[in-house]
Image 1 (cartoon, rainbow, N blue to C red):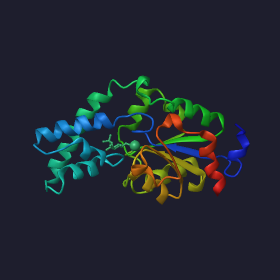
Image 2 (cartoon, rainbow, N blue to C red):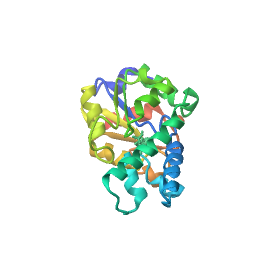
Image 3 (spheres, rainbow, N blue to C red):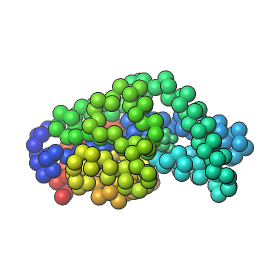
Length: 226
Ligand code: B16
Ligand code: MG
């Protein structure tokens, strides 16, 4: 790949990766943990319901599970903490075996092309997860659930990452698996790469079925549209 061709106009450019659903698949662990809590509380919660939680914060997830049911704030806090404890039990054993196929290869290709890398996850557990995966050194900036108040679909998490990288949003490409994440990146004024079905991420500038299928030159060529 011609290194300078893609980064000249931005000098350098950045790719900002989402975590859950892009680098690793923790959605199943989130599902198991929410389901355990929901069963204990006699709340109905299906796999279909879980799809709506993709990329959204812990609190927004709880509100979706409650489906309008009113609860006092202290009870909500307890439910979120209980779910998080169940979730953390599961992610303790995460290792590099849990990195989605092709993800490390793409990180290496981008690094070698002189592109800056950042992570932007709504999760407050993101740092622990990337440490367990052994990939924390790839990212110059990590934006997580503690970095901003309003996470996806608000643009704040991605804007925070761009600011820390000292780059314009128009020099950033976001890789996301969630509709909320694509909405957030578009609102931030960034280019978007969607991972998954078009029904979910079809609004993105480019869509691939999996991270392994990403064509790095095609993705970086988005920056030439500026
Ligand atoms: P936590 P991402 C998101 O991660 C998950 O997709 C979403 O299901 C979860 O509710 C959210 O993180 C918050 O996670 O409870 O660990 O703070 O896709 O933005 O990497
Ligand atoms: Mg995600």
